[in-house]
Image (cartoon, rainbow, N blue to C red; front, side):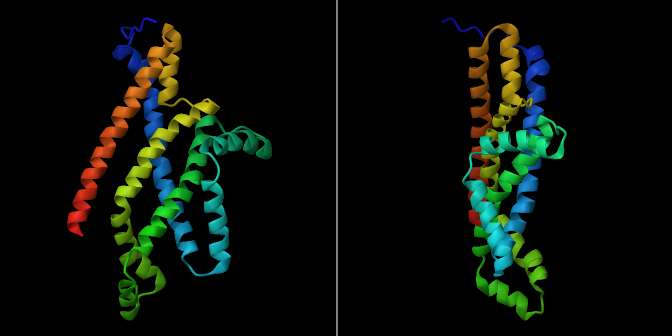
Length: 221
């Protein structure tokens, strides 16, 4: 087997890879923001102490965390168009699926962050006349976000890696870009090897930055 990477140049990258890279980054950012938003709501529901809020949130979170992401992607892509009577497209299906799936994971991260705040601060907020909403918005959640920021970013890196799973429904992500270039030039093995290297370099660099951030947050504490 003779490996030849000579066909890869800037033109190939711009024509095939960058389009997929942009979508992978876009999907990561949107799924992270949406996942944190809905995950925080789920965490608050589970910590509300009200059974009618806690129970459905717990069922959703535990259910999502028990199913492989690729299965959720395939189910949503195949079943939802059948229910609504029209296709929604691979990209939109991927966005909705990732937000719904990641919300379950971010929920547990935010729940741990909220529970890490000393109860004395909650009582202090109540003592000065803050409502539950004001206490959460102004006192608890900002500290929880700061405490959990390294974990949130680590989950985001994992999310970026998982974006390659949209390949299963034909969405054009970074892995799809490498595969398309490999097929066009008859070099699929080289393309997959390069894709693995790019994913490794990007994720390793981001993990290193997260570790640096974690040390700074530890110093602030």
